[in-house]
Image (cartoon, rainbow, N blue to C red; front, top):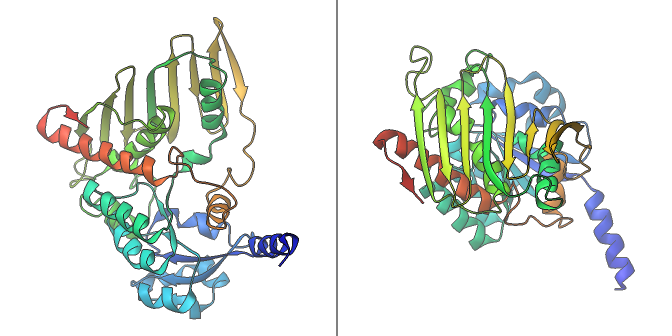
Length: 354
């Protein structure tokens, strides 16, 4: 067959919607699928959720035929044969889903973070490598134009010199306070099913971004203080976490909380020549050459602007997921190690060396 014909076949295949299955319906981020159902880049071929009461999602039922709903994950995978699975279950259950998908050669994208423990994370990596599948981790901040512009300013333009400090601020008023559903709260506030409270829910963002900005390096050590500022609301897990990562040449402080008076995902990056403040997904303030300039980051282009565009492009071989990328398995193994070290540090009152 001529190369032109092979190219045409590959192009036609890539134009087809990604065959996507959904594992679990209890995660509050399920809206990410619901809001994109009519877009055309993927089709939901199957949904696995053992709690059939969660099948009664009006948006989902209106657009996904009842025949595509299954109580059993293995049955769903065998009957619908998806190219990829997106996981909307507890963090603890990520491993169970990957154990089912990996031997079948099905790629997986989980919501952040990758796992609850380093043991789970290592097992996930072992399965992914043995069966040659991708396991991607999705963070809202991965698709922030301001983060990528900051990376470019630091790595390619040397706008602020060598990084010396990163302060990351993440969180909101609390999952109960902002009205998360009971099915989400059941595991989000459970120390086993979520692995912790705010330290896991929002600490992971800072661990992910700092690992990326530091070139995929692990910190030398981790220390943390976890607090229960609202024990009457969150009796089982922390609701406020301050995590410090020490590198040989920089310090990272991650402030993750369910006690902020507002929702926030912003970051301050300091170098020996200036600083970058990322105020939100698009707006930035850059101090360089002894002056501060406000900046609006240019919009990211597909497939790097959206988790589902990215997943499809990666599965179809249109892009390469590099080990240093925000969604990569390698980055997110370090994230889990950092979070587990933070929890250990808070319990022992000691700095944990990695």
